Image 1 (cartoon, helix red, strand yellow):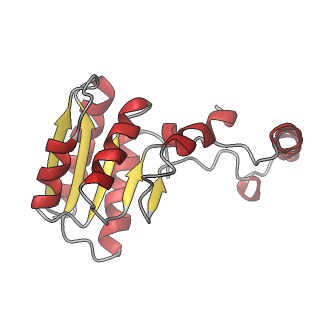
Image 2 (spheres, helix red, strand yellow):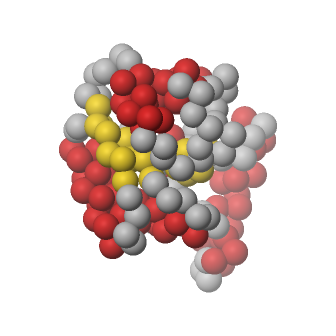
Length: 170
C-alpha cells in the first residue's frame, strides 16, 4: 500500500471488505494527520458502502478506553488506528483491556521494533500495517538501487541482528 492517507485508508478498508468485514472501526487523533486520515477513511468507506464507527481522540489523551468501548459496543469487525508514537501504545492497551479480538491496522509510522517491543504484551492477534514497496527489490528495475538497498539491508542486519524496520528505512 502507499503511505499517503487517502490510499492507505482506502486500501485498508478495501482489504477488510474483501475479508467479509461488515463494520469497520476508525480511530483517529484530532491533530492534522488524524483529521486527514479520518476524512479519507470516511470517504473510502462511503465509496465502498461499508459502515464505519468513527471515534476520535485528543493526541494528549492518557486513556482511550471510552473510544474503544464505543467501538466494541457497536461491534466493529476490524479497526484502523491512524496515529503514531505513544497514542498507538495507549490505543492498543485500551483494545486489550476491552478484550477486543479484531484485526487492527496501524499506519507505517508504527512499523518499528522499538514500538512493537512496547506493546508486545497487548499486541492483537492480527496486526496489519500500511506501507510502501519502495524497498522491495523484486519490483525495482534499477540495478544500482537494488544493490544500494541490499547493501543497506546487509549492513543493518549485521549491526542490529534484525532486518530493517520502517524507521530504519525512513
